Image (cartoon, rainbow, N blue to C red; front, side, top):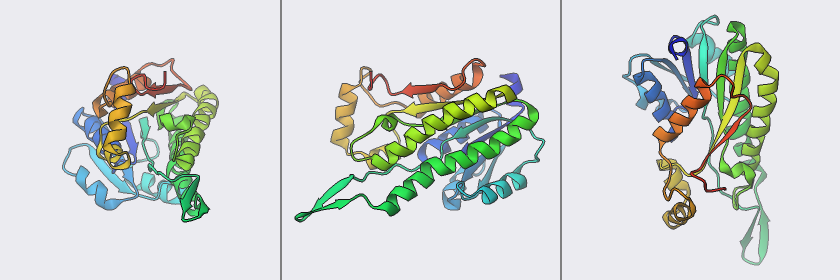
Length: 248
């Protein structure tokens, strides 16, 4: 990992519950970190740590992202790792019953979820990959979810995360010969504020009961799994389930 320690780590979605902890962790380990998010207010919480820079940009907008990257780091700087944690959890049924009528999932919210979870991840991964390819090395870890297999009440979110997995495999095939490995991690239920805000406590308790390990995952355990995907140079195109055995 000595070579990796000399290169940049970029964390997208760094203002989120997972991204913020991961950005802190890499900076505290002595790595140089660029934390990206579209929400400047959320990025303010990451200040004060040596080696951690922040940049605000709409990550689904290629021009905005390129501008943020150009301002933060020279094009010839080596980027060792992209933790592509940008995303938005969204619950909305395909059909909702309102009175005596069925109301279909809103197209506006569907497009918003796809943009936040798939388009932003694609734009970020491809633009960072171009910079990695210039130096002939780098690792991208995209964020999928157990919802990629289909989850009740999350049709849009499930579609976006399934797209992440297909995108990851395609990128791994194309970028491997250029020295850039691409993997994804598919978390189950991680004990952070966004999980508890999106899923009712009785439902989380039920999921914990059905997980062989018997609890939710932690962010530190998630970070250790990402460490493995970065360190093992023969892992490429892998979608790593990280759910404590929930979907066995």
